[in-house]
Image (cartoon, rainbow, N blue to C red; front, side):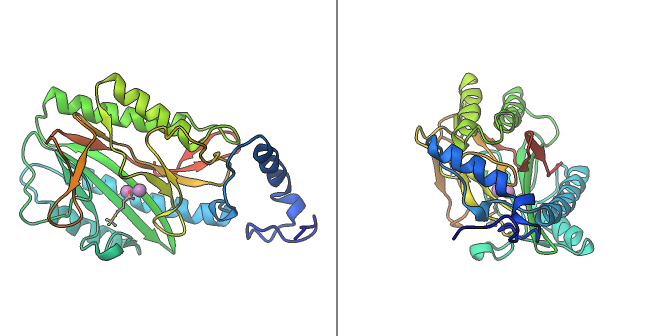
Length: 289
Ligand code: MF3
Ligand code: CO
Ligand code: CO
C-alpha cells in the first residue's frame, strides 16, 4: 500500500511519514536496487524505543560495574548470580536470562575454556589466574540491553592477558567497521576475523550477536566472521550486539553435560566481550557504556 506523506510513519513515532522515515525509505530502495539486502522494518527502532533501551543499558552497565568492584579469588560464580539478583531487584529491573528457554540462573559466568553460557554454581570457586566472562542481559521497563566483560582474577598469564585484550580489540574493530547505509553484517565479521587471525586465534561460529531491544534476541544475526554471501546493510535505528567469542586454539566447541555451557574442544582459553550498539545517522553509538 502506498504511504502518503501526511500519513503516520510506520515506525510508531506518531510523526508524519514525510517528516520521519520517507527519505530513509528512499535510501533503502536505492540500496536494494544496487543489490544490498535491506533490513526489515521490525529491525528499526524509533526514538522512544531507543531511549528505553538506553535506560536498560544504564542499569545493565551498573550491574557489570558492581560485579567488577566485587569479583575476586575465592568467590563462587553463584555469588555473582546473587549479586545480579540483588542489584537488578533494587533497580526495578529483572534478568532476561532467568528461565530463558529453561536457563536456570540470572547471568552467565564462563571461566577459562568455557566459551559462553557458563551457569553460576556454588561449586565453581574463582581462583588466582582465572579469566571469566560475565554476560548480563537486563530487562528494564520492557526494554532489553545485553553486554559482557572479561575479568582477570589475580595474577593471570601473559597468554591469557593477550587473549582478553585482543578479544576486546576484535569487538572494537567490529564496531568501527559500521558505516550507516554502507557497511553490512559481513563487514563486522570480516573486521573481527582479520584481527583475531593476526594473533593466531580462532573465531567461534556457533554463536553470534543479534538485534536487541524489545526482546533479548531479535533479527538480524550478527556474525563474527565473513560468510562471503550477501548480508543486511546497517542503517540508522538498528540496535544490535557484537559479541565475539575468540579461542586461543581451534575454533571448535562442544556443549557440556548441563546442556548449556559451551567449551573449547581443545581445552584452550576462550574470551568474549559484548556491547549493545545503536546505528546512528553518522556512525554508531555504544549504548552499553
Ligand atoms: N547474554 C546472552 C547473549 O549475549 C544470552 C544469554 S542466554 C541465557 O545473547 F540463556 F543465559 F539467557
Ligand atoms: Co550477552
Ligand atoms: Co548477546
